[in-house]
Amino acid sequence: MVVRRFTLALLLTLLSLAAVFPPPAGAQLEPVNVPWPQLLPPAPGSGGPQPAATASCHTATLRCVDGVIRRMDAAWQPLDRSCDHRAVFALTYLITTRGFRDTLGRDPHFFRDFDWIVHLDADFADLYFRAFDNYAHHRGFVPRAWRTAFDAARGDQTNAGQDVFLGMNAHIQRDLPFALAEVGLRMRDSSSRKPDHDQVNAILVSVMEHIKQELQRRYDSIFQWGSPSQPFPATDQAALEVLKSWREGAWRNAERLVNAHSASERRSVAQSIEDNAQLWAQSIVTGTVPGYQAIRDPYCRQAHA
Image 1 (tube, rainbow, N blue to C red):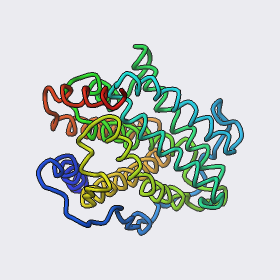
Image 2: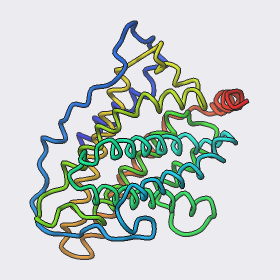
Image 3: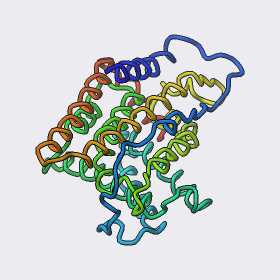
Image 4: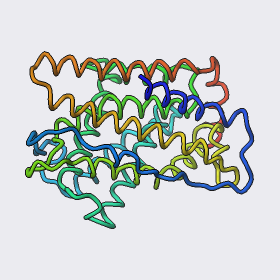
């Protein structure tokens, strides 16, 4: 609960500081990836699930990641053309996955277990696509955190920063524990895969500035405070630490899922994951401004003209 209050305070600071204080001159552009998650050891355990072939990734190669990127691009483009608020997270996820793919292409040994991280990428993305499609077509199961995010995107109150964090909350805090538990937390020799999980934080740092520039250029002037001419790294650092804390929590919840001693205990853990993500979603939408759509939508249409 203390960690939740702390990260919530960081998030609310991120969403509001830029509108209140001017950015300092000559500030540093990029946040620093302080590797505190690497200092937290994995829970004891041995064995567990291993990555398996799926429809979206039969064999772990870069083609799996390329396929994810093609699906993301195809989903994002119509949202972008229509200034649909869901385009904000869709583009954020697309840029992040491109950064992941570029990292693998440059250095296949960036992660210890290439096969695992590629299968995780595909399985993780499948959860997003499933929630997106089920919501769009009014069918099947849509997790509450995703429903709150999509409902907010249809409304007139969120800014693009809130849309980003609603999507990231649903995908990281709700989806990621289930994806991690599915592909397994330990290698065949029982060593933990947490170091590979923590490595993703470095990729997040590498794409943050590009994401901000694209969201500002396309969707919402609220991101102008983060442009190269007006850097405000304090909020960048807050954003990074929020995301890292969510990812650390996702790993711990995945451990709880894998280490559950019964189906009943696993259902209880799963419910707590759903409840936590929904609580965060509700906290984010609490700070919305009625009618903000009248500011961001004309800005987006002008940017696309």
